[in-house]
Image 1 (cartoon, rainbow, N blue to C red):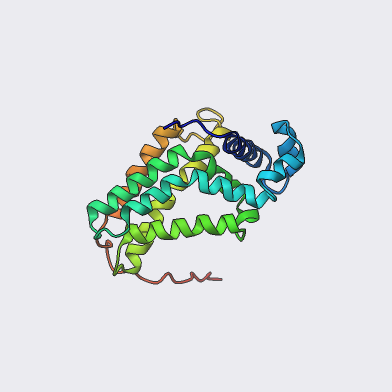
Image 2: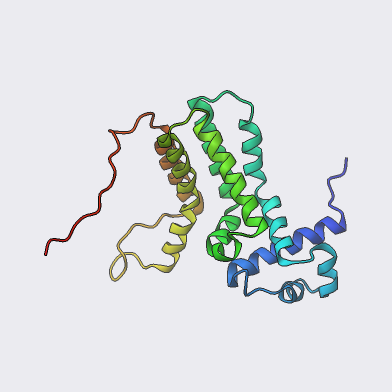
Length: 216
């Protein structure tokens, strides 16, 4: 069976790639359909044939680039929960995020515009499903919190990498060691995520945080 893409699917893929590049570079709200069409070298009418709105394009980006998350969810659904399954889900999630780093960076940088959009809500649903699979049934609040922090520690790695891009280390700089390549940073994030999600019991009973009073 031939795996050659049809011209239509190839055009859709090019639109998604170019749109993601522009959205990440200058923001979702500041990018117009006209700019996307011009970058592709096609008419606006040709772009409309595939996507009617920018949100349609973002949904296409999410669905095409979030495939590893969907695969991890499909892998975990229906299986009895165990620490081994939990760790494997975290590993699969981290591996998928290495491949889909542009999508995460795009969401980090365009959160205000995307938070309540259909595409943003679809991505949120995927994250909620992953978190539930990681913490398993009959989870305590601590379990749910650890699962959430584990996955978001992986997502937050891109924010740290972007900070490194804009900072100078050493004399005159922040002095903080850089995260290195994306693969090295994600390997570190996976280690931290597994440490967070793998703790069975909290170190001690949780105490409410009380506001401090200023003595005059």
